[in-house]
Every structure is written in structure tokens, then in C-alpha cells.
Image (tube, rainbow, N blue to C red; front, side, top):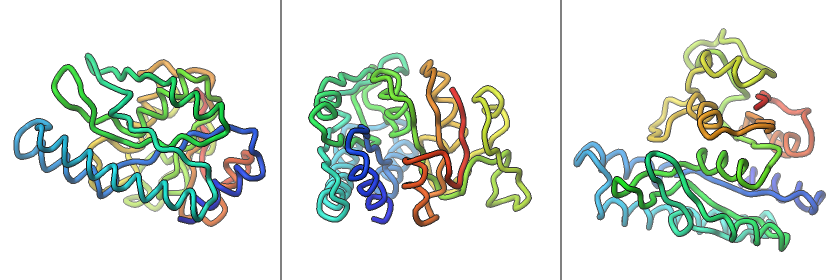
Length: 233
């Protein structure tokens, strides 16, 4: 909840700066999808239903604490209600997101299962972030991670891995490795960065923020003086 408090503090200080909050599936969504795909080779109707229900439960917790603890004016928007995937590409109707932002509120979205031309697919929170940034002309994306920035190798495996402090996207995409060893059906840090290129995002500053450092998210929201990395698109 500390991260939400830091976001809330930033929004109280800079209410004119609009923020979209997107969270992933974590232990609520990823294991369900992984188990279903392992068993059946696809996301079945039952898996879609159970994953959707689990993600709604997680989102309710995030929204509740956003409002009651962090004083974030949070309004949840279900991705499966506004997004679909066709030919591997996301398509979202973002009118509701834009309207909530215009009213000074904070849209809260999340990684979700959505209808696609293949039946059902996962629309990750990472993809949503890139898509919304592109369509609504955002100037920054912040990815909060469990490591303190972007590395050429996994720092959990190689303690001597070199940290990339600031670089152009083209300079780093082929060299970074995923920084998470946990179950993740949507890919790690490499996938996050590649996604932006695949979706044609341009003119966006991406901050990779170490989430375990107290006050670091607030610093990253407020300025470039934070522990982490910056990648320019």
C-alpha cells in the first residue's frame, strides 16, 4: 500500500497532472491462466470466467485502498468491457478513460482476459499502458518493478550485471533480459520494452522504477531524480 500512498501524495501535490493507474494480475490472474493453458492449450470459457472474477477481486482491493488509504480519486474500468484483441493487436474504446481523466479522477485498469478472434486472450497491463499512452498522447510511462532499474542481465542471477541508467529504446531492447523469475504469462522486462516498439509508441519517456525503495515512486513521478532507469521512445 506504500506505493499507493506515494501516488496519492503526488496527486495531492500536483492535481493538474492526470494519471492512469494500471496493475497486473500477480498471483490472482497469472497462475489461473497458466494452469488453463497447460491443461487445455487455450483459455477456455471456464478459465475466462474464473480469471475475470479473480481480477475483479484484486482490482476491488486496489481501488478500495486507493480511495480509503491513499486518497486517490480512483474509478475502476474493466478492460474486458472496453477492449478486445484481433490478429494479435489490442483494440480499446478509450472514451470512458478520457472522460474520467477530464473529470479529475484516476482511472484504474488492470491486466485482464478479453474476447479475441481466437476466443479469449490475455491483455496485459503492460500492453494497456503502451496502448493508452499512444492513443491519449501520454508523455511518460512508469513501470514499477522489484529491481532498481534496467540491467543488461538479470541482477538476481548476476550480481555484477551492468545497470542502464538512461538510453534510447533501440539501444537496449536487444540486450536486456527479464528481471523476474516468478510466474509471468505476459513476459518480463524485455517484453515490456518490445511492446512499445510493436505498438509504434513515439515521444514517450519510460521510467523503470525500483518499487522497494521508500519514496522512490513519488520521486519518479515528480522528477527524474529517482533510483531506476530512463528509456526514451
